Length: 303
Ligand code: GLN
Image (cartoon, rainbow, N blue to C red; front, side, top):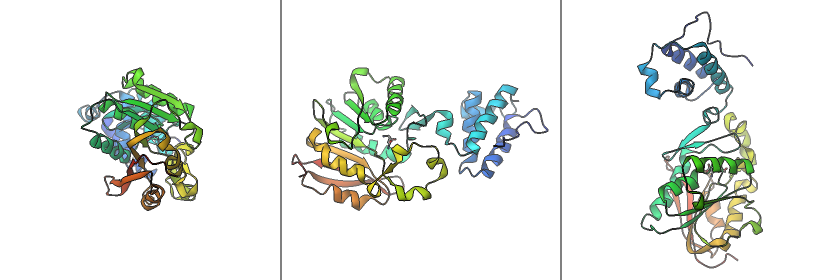
């Protein structure tokens, strides 16, 4: 793999020149946000705030800085997501550690968190929240930050993901007694057991149909964990499992929030049309697409 020749014939690159040159390089490599990418990589290498790149426009990079920048730029040029290169991603107002073992938190998922916060804003007592498929922990830990009286339970089938979630919980200073993370496969009926019922269930399960893989961008396909992305049964497999088993852990009146794919609204609503659920609604994302299905447990088992 060829490396970008940031040293070129010129030896002393300042920030301004490097920004321009590297932006052109990433543009040619097909990055949709080349300038932003370069700025983020440079702030990482120089350990400065983004505004400092402009304040220090004339600053000449030292050789180790230049080498490190070139290494990161090469990775980005090959299509690696910027969040994996930096090892972190902002979600809600928090910084999450991410590794290639977890899905990169998406801005669209923030509307799920916001809906939960809004629906429960008048309940200040302690609620129990279960996040099925917690990944980096972004949904659950953001909720616990915003609702410090609540208690969180996070499940994931991946031990590596749970380690990342644990790391994030520590960084975000979530009191250890407020959070239980455990390795569970939500597709198995026997996984759905807890000592006490929960009042809120959240999940952003894998929902991309295997058939859709060829249409996905390469930086998702080649870098994000398959286990977190794809689901059988045209992508709705996990919703069926949640619908069938979650009631066992829910108190009547408990709410469920699941993120859904952009064309799955009617299919998922159909799945949650058994007597177990009522007050079902969709929550749109920033583009106005139905992104989350919210529903309430009636207290009647589905079947
Ligand atoms: N809950 C995590 C997120 O929303 C992980 C989701 C997943 O792995 N499918 O990012």
